[in-house]
Length: 367
Image 1: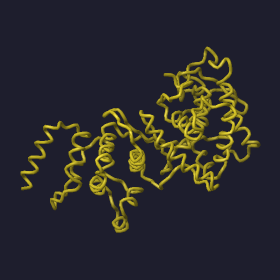
Image 2: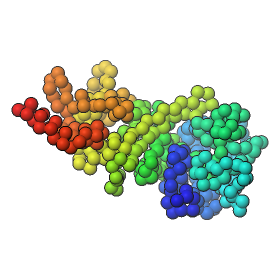
Image 3: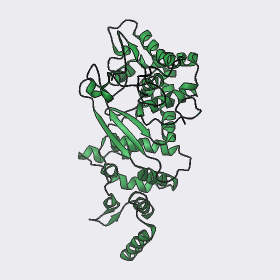
Image 4: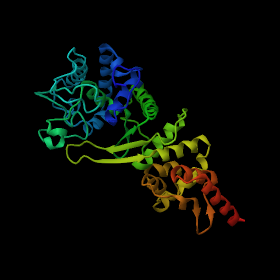
């Protein structure tokens, strides 16, 4: 199925492109390629209203360096920004929309030919000022095939400009991605709902935030939000999540990638489905690396926002967490057998027969 001219979205695998398309779809109720040019113009006006606010300009300054909206000395910057986005779509919709035959396919969707666009006094492919975490200027070693810029079609370039609507603010910015469109759809609904509240009240705060500064913990919070709304059956071993913790500064851009594998997604989904959140939280609570008396007084949610958690950390590093189910010094158990059994079966991939032997041995020891 092509990413274009379809009632459904086939994920491109590019987190900026995919998030941008879902942001537009969630806001407009239709995919970008289904919208009329007039509907797209209306959306761009709304986007301009959001991005022109001070909190959002700050975000844009380290997502799209040299964006017209962040240039204080640039004249008519709002008009330039709007015209640029509309030109992406207009050129993509031209009769000759397959572009120059010598150009490669779009690096995002792979469905259309890449195109060059006018940027101030240049006619070129995109740089990092349009596509985060790529190259800039004439330094071709940053680009595939030694081209002058990264090759994208108009639809994907437009989508990338929409992607900040679905970011989560942490120490840097968090960009969620998944191989399952439902994950991104649920997150998009959450982020866009918050954004609509900002727009209605004219109280702009930037991308969605819960004041997390620990990015690993934030990933588990994002997973929790998504699973709270999850109602579909999912085949085991098919859904994974990842989060990109990044900046796109001209000097020293930062990037961390945290992956939540399908086995861990299945485990967390089972915890939610079997109403085991409370005993699971007991285990997670033991992982916080508390520092001083102030941390001792904080509750679970306060700790999770800023304090490193070894349970989360070890899970993302594919390291065992069985030691957190038992305090060996006092022989105090944490969680319960159901949580431990789910962890051993879904994350550690233990066979059921072996688990029964472990349980029977534990029962004999306890008596």
